[in-house]
Image (cartoon, rainbow, N blue to C red):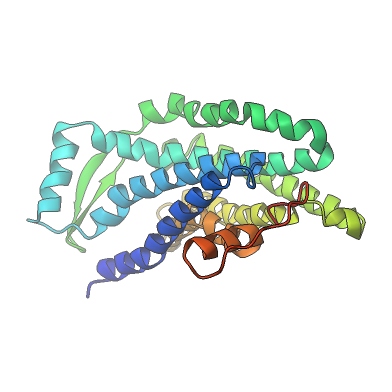
Length: 299
């Protein structure tokens, strides 16, 4: 088995269950809207759908192309869209576009958790009311950069007998705005999550039980993946032309997949309510009533 196929099978091993779990959590959250009614879950649904979209773009743009060989049906497909359509440019643009969206969304959810901790009674309703507008803004604004800058060419790699899309733009130009954006949003996310954890730790034990601490932990772990992705992206730009750059470029897609697919696993691991509802849905547990406690109903 070729290395490309080995990597592709590893990718399927963790991505397929993750996507399935995404749709299961979507169903559970939407079916139990009265239970999962916080602004966090509005953001989770948006983030989840955007991550599924990111996954599909990466699957077509990178993963599937990595196992495309000369003379196959997939070769004809990729050559056609690369020669006669603008779809290849669109896919490349979306690869960078969704990086903007992912990093901005992580910062937004971190801000959500921090601000709700400060003044729940009026900030939480405000989030519920305006979340859709913030999410729409996050998705649209990067288009002013991504939909006009990322042209691609299809290239045949003789050493691996495969194809890939390559931008004629130098790496410094490709990442000119993305890298600073990633660094800034990562710093914001990390700062907000550290501040949130500090606030929770300073609370009295009785008050701490009423705070959705699990959601803050979920965002803190997501932020760690974001930090790793940022470090690798910066390292790739700084080491262009050096052998170590290939190592960073090999690792980065897996870290990007982690940022894309980790959310439902963290929710499953840290939310008892989600675990109970999924267990009941799958017939693994008898249906029981979950005690409603204000501000801690998703623990």
